Amino acid sequence: MKPIKIIVPVSIECPPLHGEITYLACNDISVKLISPYSGVSSGLHIPYFAMHYAVMNDKCFANPDGNVSEHGWETAEHLLKDLYDCCVLFHRHRDEIEKEYALFQKSVKALDKNFLSDELYREKKRELRRQLRANEIDLKNYEKTLWELRKQNKKYSDEVFCVQKGFEDTVQRICCTKHYIPVMELVKAFIKY
Image 1 (tube, rainbow, N blue to C red):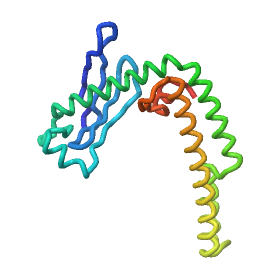
Image 2: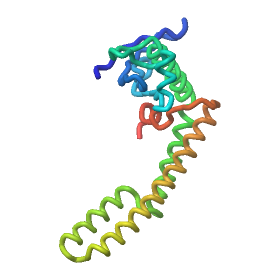
Image 3: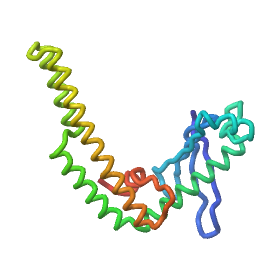
């Protein structure tokens, strides 16, 4: 799909938001903020079980011909305004968030020492495959060892998820908002790491 440009007026003191609709379907829409901030995107999905209601009440994001519906334009504008508000909050508290992000990175590196990280898992899996091909181990030992590696890597993924969730909750608290903030996407856009 070719991105559809969109300009949203916000207020007198704020320049209009420039963005684009990057994905559009009857039940999905994704937008990307281009200006005054860039590199941040968001989307909305209507689940399958709610599609009947959406179709019957003209709440689909796209018309049957594939063009953006009126509800799609309203949703895109709403998503862009929400992204802009998140960017403003994030930018306002950037120094505090950068400190918390440094702590987050240290916590993840500490997990690398105690658990089987994704990179180490891939290396061990490659080595295990090499041993199987070279007939250094049999299939039963290969499967048993691989299962153990997967289990260890799953523990690592679970721990990283918990640390990341804690970081995201901290950013929510710093920004004093209960609204959803796409924290990791904002980190990628604003913080050099």
